[in-house]
Length: 211
Image 1 (cartoon, helix red, strand yellow):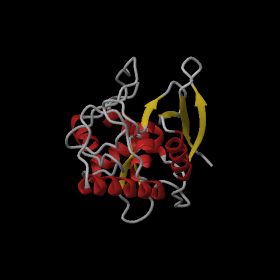
Image 2 (cartoon, one colour):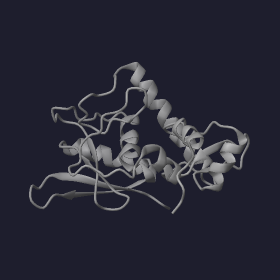
Image 3 (spheres, one colour):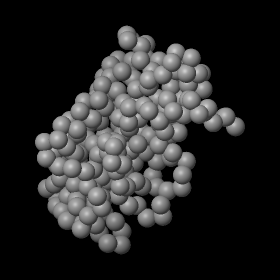
Image 4 (cartoon, helix red, strand yellow):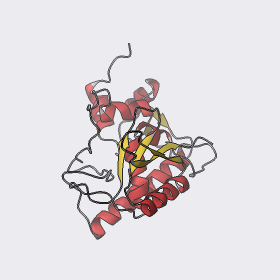
């Protein structure tokens, strides 16, 4: 079994940029994380270090059991989180929120560019595959789609599914649902529309495109 990171290494991991995974630390600390497969050194100048999907899992604590029912997570006060819809405490709105979302989306596109040999930004990267709900929600929020409020009003809701590498996007309005599908497809996701067998509720099933 792989040994857990040391306290010093864990502090470096916890301090990583929440979107890009860019690391700050001493050369020995960064080299040790690379050796353990928790970080990688970008081949292009300035040769910054970034978390690998394994490093992101440690940072996010995704080894904890998932809730029995899919619920909207409450974002931490000091960490950016895309709106997945239905949050009890929604992030601030207005120009400040718009700037945060724009910055996060641009950072994600840069992460795609830096982690792909050809520098392409048209397909999701490893971070997105490790954080499917947040990645899909960020693509929707950055494109201007409206998330659902805590009372279940109209708007999108992004939820995890039992299917590997797939999220469900619920949007009661058919036109808005089609617009969400178009946005995700432009962001590099494969999208199909389905109906729940018992209720007939329409939803989108979206997966990161590989090619």
